[in-house]
Length: 232
Image (cartoon, rainbow, N blue to C red; front, side, top):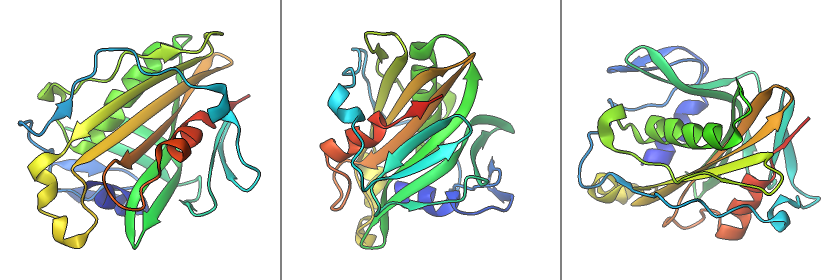
């Protein structure tokens, strides 16, 4: 029930210590990092598919979620948390990923997808930020240690060089089976980070979904959420 634990935990605003993993302001409930095994990440070395212009067209009914100079859009069915709530993952006392502006899609009471705006990074390397962001957030939400061998796709960039794009697909395999009875578990998950230049900073949107759970966003809707990032 990985996405369920994440979505429920990210809605918590207190400081909570869960085993060896401490998450600030918004807490992912887990017993500790997931051990690397045969059910680890599917490795991707090839560049991610470049975003299409059509994916950046936001339907009029969608709702904008904004933090600072960055914003993205989700369908009305996605629930949105106050932008003052911070989403953060800590491992061994150090923050490995953090951001604000969380939105969650639930189906039959089960969170099946989520999105968040990562904290801005002072950089001009949108591809590097996209790949590092995808890897850090995937490690955080999958509970994988730094030595797990998790690999993000090589980042693609748009023709104007203003956007970078990277994905991580995770095979949860037998680890997901423990929650199968709840109907919320999935054996495969996907996380995408898209980064865009905004002045001297690079802002990034992180979007994750189960790939094999009823009610999870289909490709077209998922890509449109990812492509909706805008920055001033």
